[in-house]
Image 1 (tube, rainbow over the protein chains, first blue to last red):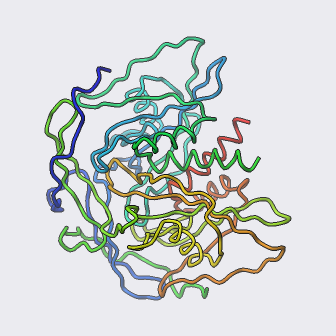
Image 2 (cartoon, helix red, strand yellow; image 1 turned 30 degrees about the vertical axis):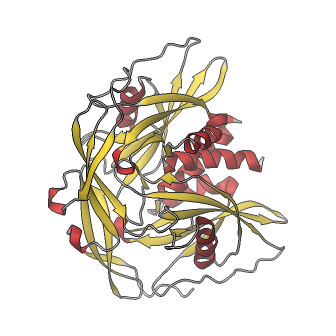
Image 3 (tube, rainbow over the protein chains, first blue to last red; image 1 turned 30 degrees about the horizontal axis):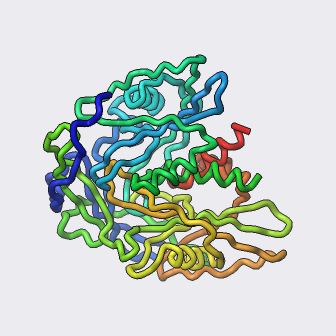
Length: 204
Length: 204
């Protein structure tokens, strides 16, 4: 991937009228609570959910190498909503008629070039249920490497800039701490995975 | 906590006009990408962020008991955006002038009754940076129990119904799989923590 020609930047932030939104929607939920009281909740959601019933899939890659410890792939990309380089698992929206499994292998190949096999798929989990209708699945994808360091080629769309980093799983937590310290923003789901790995170490 | 008098329900879902939203906001981001091209991104965010600069805190409790293996606390509550009982870490919004540490100990006490001490605080991580401006921190809170099973009293607000469950950390993953199978919706952050714990087991 050629280096980006310039740094991305936010030029203007304005309120988004609901009727102009193409990708996300804003909902007013009238609901009745456990005491029978009528209440209102505000929510945001994606408008792109397809036949799978799931918005998105994230990919926890397990890179197996004959002589190295198991590693995973994380990606660095600029995200306009937080105006920062974010550190995330590879992930993407599931296409209209796609299964989560197919989406996981496709997104991994597009964003990283690596070809893997889905060896685990989470139940459908809710992204942020206090304010969002969004949901997702976490796929575990195994990539088996031969004893060489061939870097596969990403298949990015025009205007997509994604840097990929291979991190030994045993070092994931420390690497995320270091990225945060240098001003990158770690995705909450990736952080929680690392927190689980780290907690397992502490409990041993 | 007395059992809820009735099941909560969604009565009506309507589009939410931006100017009516009290808790969340919808933003149109005009930005310039790495090739110098002008682009637009749609984002949602909370309007409640205070002086800490962080929207919310989630709490990974470590319950220490003299004769039992380490456990954590998860909560079950109805969430209107997904119209389901969700399974989550205790969590809440950080008040306007509150630190994340104070918010973590306060929310844990309100939602579960347990009094703990913050022993770890994550960097500020971004909740869902593809569509949200939201951010959060994950606090690790230690609760030391004496050798008795005194259940402390929750301090819930009127109309709040939260069931708490104590789960040995070694069983967290399987318990979340079981909750999903019975139709409850697991929060993505809690799932990823359990996925990290489970992955650590598989790598041993």
